[in-house]
Length: 374
Image (cartoon, rainbow, N blue to C red):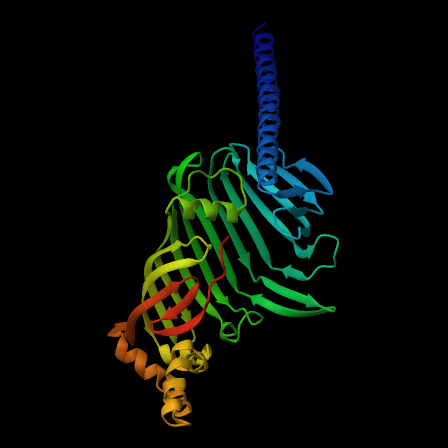
């Protein structure tokens, strides 16, 4: 009798464990399906948000997996049509794997599979991008985004012309982070943006960019009315109309022997071009001036043209002598005009980096032009 009671209790114990396991398994499965549905709805919400901004994202085929602890959306032959560009631009990649943890379905982490191609709609690709690793993370909901991050290891961007690739950009590592630090997506958001570059060169853009650059830049966008879906040129136009600004709170760049740090504020004029000034401290400025061919820029500047013409009227040939001397003494002139200081133990000069209707001046020296943002 006692043995029978012990046997029955043991059977009930096993049966209870089986029931608990079945309940747990069923409950977890229900939770996974619920979370996967919420993650898929979040993903569709992001697609709808991007579509309102003129960016249509599609998949050749889409599958959902990752059970039991993750939700994974595998998008094969991913593509995007940027209707806001004129002409429209089509972007294609081998695929995207989008994952979310079951307990955080609104944090989407994506891994991109290359190569990625960019082409005008209906045309052959003119840009090809490859990488060792490309990943993004998005936190928040489509109605209330909180932050976005992009990380690239060993990216290579090539321009293709007549079947021949030319490097536009090559880097060891790139990170871009954006987050709302004040306000909300619906009401006066203040957005912090951070950019990190490691051994990044852009030989196809400018000879001065052939030497790799390391950079760590943090800025803040102030003056946005909201962060509703819209193209960035429209967003920048609204920022300008509201008297907003771009605060560069911290910037450090190093290229070869040149190191520069700085901060300041920029704004946009009605033409969409940058206005304002950064206070920068530069060590090894001579190397930088040589890399951008500053001597030629000074010799060809309107100010030197006017001076040269006036001198030529006084004595033919004198203007050309002045032009040559102006270029030859550029580094000395900047060091005299700027404030002498040190940076990271090296002799340096502090001077303004000025933006005037998109034209960029380092002290008195024109060094380039920034494109209009709208």
